[in-house]
Image (cartoon, rainbow, N blue to C red; front, side):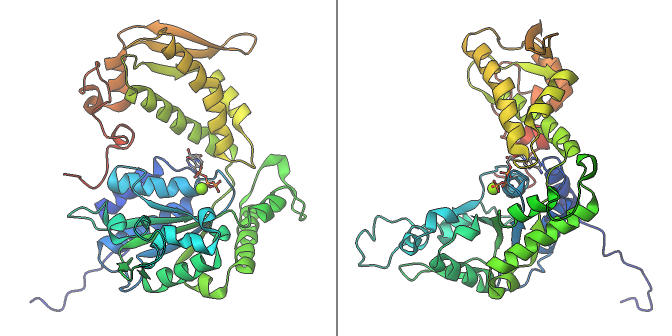
Length: 386
Ligand SMILES: Nc1ncnc2c1ncn2[C@@H]1O[C@H](COP(=O)(O)OP(=O)(O)OP(=O)(O)O)[C@@H](O)[C@H]1O
Ligand SMILES: [Mg+2]
């Protein structure tokens, strides 16, 4: 043993796994730093094995406007950890508004009519299904918790505090390896009021400054405190208020979404995987049509589907595009979108440029078909599935 050392340590340094996790999420989520910071912190704590025993790994409440990324963050965590955005046990609280519907979650006691037919959602097997040898964490999402019935609340309080649940047939479920996300639109109305200046805060040039952000965040947390019991609020590790997305965020989200449309095309079945690009004029049109503070990125996604995906689907269905084509999308003088085939057989080089050699080496013939859903965009999951 050496003694008398005086080596300074750096507690702010993160492991390379945690850094990879953080950047995988940052590639998908725009403008919600608080949420990313918090999930990375929890990831780091879990990988170091320092999460508190006998309770969930984390209890996070996401508040904020519709279409601001609350659900998307959870999907992005699932993609980063398990390579699949669906690697989440998702409970839509709106489906359990009546107390008797709780049987869908936990099953009914033996002897009850239909006992054998109910397959509870929240079993240990359902929670553990994504575990790997290296990584045993489950993601659970309770969506729209303000719509939960009293019975669901009771169940939730137990989960958040003790990380256990008793099923209808008395089996115990251990949720101590779960990261619990709860989402609610609660406070979105109040945030909107702040945004619209009806509470006395004018919005200079349509810009949202950080002071207004803070006021909006406080308005949402206040709304949550009014609605939810202190018992519940005290069990949360963190309340993250998602910010209203601004034009500069929507610009970045547009790029991400265009990349996802391209991925969809490359993963499509059939022999017509092609590559497209949009000129800045087209992007400006999509942003113009897709910007609505109230609906966040949902409105932008609708604009992309309507103006881009539907016409592209027509081109595919009528065999006007084929494998390896390069389509340039522009606006003409009347502001109408034009679709022009500029090259054929362009797939391999363009793929190389866009997604790197690994993707293109899958071969032009079935481009992307054998690559995991997310691998092209993110470099693949952090956790290997063997
Ligand atoms: N901050 C963001 N970064 C990247 N994409 C986003 C962001 N916010 C929204 N999106 C895009 O918009 C879609 C809808 O967002 P999401 O489902 O996360 O909304 P939400 O906040 O959960 O809304 P709701 O309260 O209505 O459920 C996402 O699938 C994603 O494509
Ligand atoms: Mg949602």
